[in-house]
Image 1 (cartoon, rainbow, N blue to C red):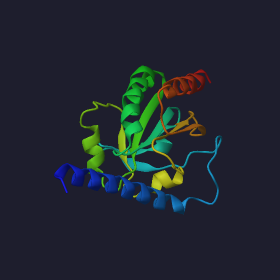
Image 2: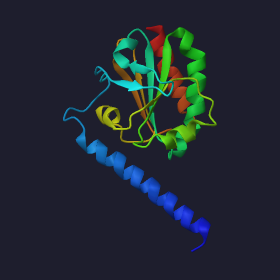
Image 3: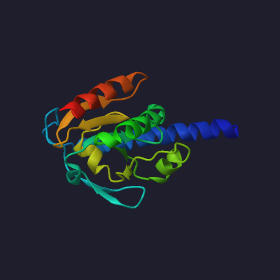
Length: 175
């Protein structure tokens, strides 16, 4: 077997295992499904900066929670979009939090190395938070209003979603 074929096979298996691990962690979802209008589950996670961030302490801010993984191609495309939203709207009370869902966060750190992001990156290495938010797709973006209520959820990412995000954020800013 050629070295490149072997590496591609191992990479493919790694991605499948990562998907299985995330899927298995989602089997412990709460009995009550989260829906638009529900209070967002509170959590505290350590940011890449070393600072602990607690969601409940962000009341008064609009929070864009983005659940992502290093093996997710659409996540790589979406990160620069999220950075632009962070830069454009942070002075208007909007924060973006990137939540990595991988149990081994070095892959996430490597993924971020070339992206030059300034918004907080958090690591949910136990998949507790992604389970609380019932994350079923990568990426998943949840937008919370100033009262910590879930107002929008977007599963996956495709070109053009930035228009949906902008519309949602502008709606919440005007409230």
